[in-house]
Image (cartoon, rainbow, N blue to C red):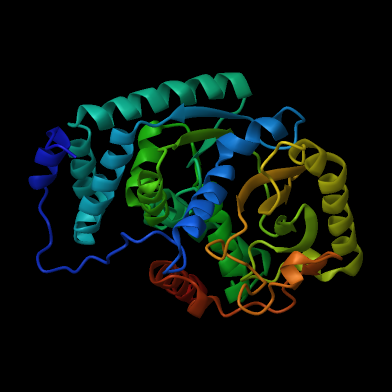
Length: 377
């Protein structure tokens, strides 16, 4: 990428000395793939870009209404460069007024500032068209959910949720670990919504997931990427599920937020109702929309949701690849289960050890918040 206003601005950012930066240049796939396998991997990824499947489902009211802002290659390159500069900042420089200064420098690049302007215009149009008070913006492949941990509004919401749990338990009550993780996941999910292009771009610049996806898109023979602006629908933690479809057969389904024990899933009738609802939704609506003779959708991983009104949705499709999180299933030992019928359903009956499974920042926030709140009188 040519030296531009962005490059010159980034040179002026005060960087922390002698900090090693992880090399994340490799695509997220198994090493040693032959060219034909690499081509198939790229195809699987692009087939599950939201632009590929969303129009088929939205036409039937099966997924959230969506609008697109196509991305040029130079914009993806600007995002990659911005993330790499962000990674060189000290933890202090990633906060408050220091981060605001860093982001202001990014906007000195005409490519970056135009991207924000275009995205904001489309967001405003969507808010008006969808008749909603906020939207969710993601890349063609994935969201920036890994980056919300750095947002003050997210941490404040998390603390408020924990305080509410404690109050509901009465005098002497505590916010237990499982309730804390549910609160953390809920606050993180809600922090993915907003009305400002600047809010979302600041998330994207912080997101390793977006960075990886941009690099992968730039490696493909035919560059294709963009931003998807989606209608925001409220879905409770414990009402999202990951489904595995192989050769157009619905083979496996499990709780999406698999670190937590969700109370309503402990009831066998409730579980059966949910399974039946999703199976019927898939068989009667999703499969007919996606499985046309000419469509590429043979193997994929579908994320389902049942919203607070009881309506079932497809959130997104993901590649049927080991690079996609298997959730409560193991790619290493359960491939046969993930590729054969009848449908196998899993849920958590015991909370998992989130203090180990969560990333370092998330773990630190969880532990420190619970310790402080539960110590209060």
